[in-house]
Image (spheres, rainbow, N blue to C red):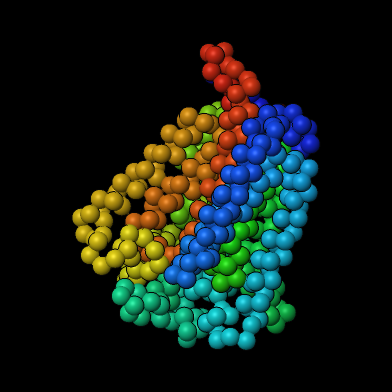
Length: 447
């Protein structure tokens, strides 16, 4: 199969006037697309009218309206879509920043103004790293506010917060905060990790806004990254948005800056190991679109992980593995309590024991196999990203520790299907020697 490279020198207007204009919704702006957009928006906002709607349903509806409904509504108006792209970036960035600031500086209880427990220990671990201490042997009980020392476990019973004795992330997740903690301490301030999460969000949305894909597609992806899930959980203080934004940035940089993309993905993986589902399909996409030479340009990904992890693994193997591996698998003591969503929370006695085990195994198999099959059929880094979003659902839905904030990752990755579809339709204009469509390589850096 002949592999061709996308014309990266094209401007956004040229793409939308040329290859991008061949995309069905942008071609004629038919009433059917506007109708579909209206239907999606109405259906997405329906949970607002239901008094019994849970938070995740409301947030999912808002995310769907922004990432699917709005793009369909403006698909037939390229000029309007182009004007909305920078406006969406600015508005979502301001809203996310305001929400985080308002929560951090509000007048409510300390628990409501503080970070999520995982982010609190990340800040403490960053201080450990800055002072050459090992965070995997540290005790974070004193770093946690009294309101965070107990968390809700099974059946509503409060249990000791397990992150008091575990740092469940890889070193790079804290290392990126270390310089800021040092500077903040020198100024007599306290570093707030939400700041770096917000910066990563703005960077990801700006990178998407500068992509050559048609504006209505970029609008959908921006709505997914900066939508309701991201705003709410950035304000809450979880680190999911930071990881999701870096993952999207890595895909945006895949075509021209693979080394930088690899480093960004290494930090994303260090911050949220769930993003490991992205690595196999992404590696396959890079090989299929650029060959093994293109994959070698991502050497910064394994290098960054090895360089940051090896010293702590060598210093205290049992502590490092207990925190980063067994804790995340629910095998360390104290056990991570069941919380949030997932099949175990559907109802008492419905999913447990062998049945839940079988569903979990099937979900893991689907999470590994389905993205690879999708990338093999439609090779692009965007297919890898969108498929990873589906894979996350396969992993999370049966999880015993599925928390709503994990859906930040899903909401950021699934809308990449817009870009994946554009890559597939764009590749249909070129044919390889075997008569099959050639791949437009979004992951091949220009010569």
